[in-house]
View 1 (cartoon, rainbow, N blue to C red):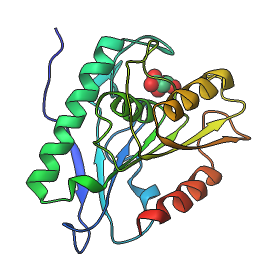
View 2 (view 1 turned 135 degrees about the horizontal axis):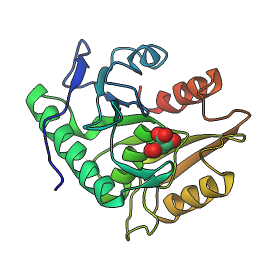
View 3 (view 1 turned 90 degrees about the horizontal axis):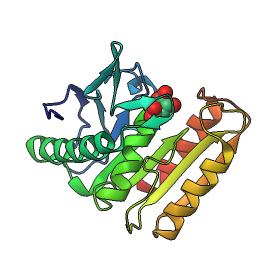
Length: 207
Ligand code: MLT
């Protein structure tokens, strides 16, 4: 039985919250809604910033969906939690009077993967998605089409995500119609300053 529940979040409104884009910051395993907020300080100012906590816990660590083992996802839960997060974001945008057409997700690892799942299930939800150290969220991808800009930053030495998997996921997104900008960095699974710099440059298009 998969239980749906409200989601824990922090929200920092812009001066003009109705017109501003909204950064939706999505943490990695063991993080929470506050985890990536400080990183948003490197991105265009005067935007709304929203941090959301995943609704699943694994040995006390928050996640956005269950996994069967390291790197093996409970794909039914991925689908359920992607729909749950999408519904939550739509509800929050309406409640806060945000422009639902300007939601830009920035996710790291598990957070990148739930954002990626939404790209396959609700292609019109995000105006853009930046995925740091992403993995393809579903073994067999559904038929999906989208046009939004998508940034991926991966680590050449990342033990979690083989570089072949990165290329396959990027190709699938490109074939679906997304405007993919992919970078392979000289790093492992950890984030680097280059991830932040590339993301800041990528976000400038919405300024
Ligand atoms: C993680 O440990 O979070 C993996 O790298 C990605 C995932 O499980 O979504």
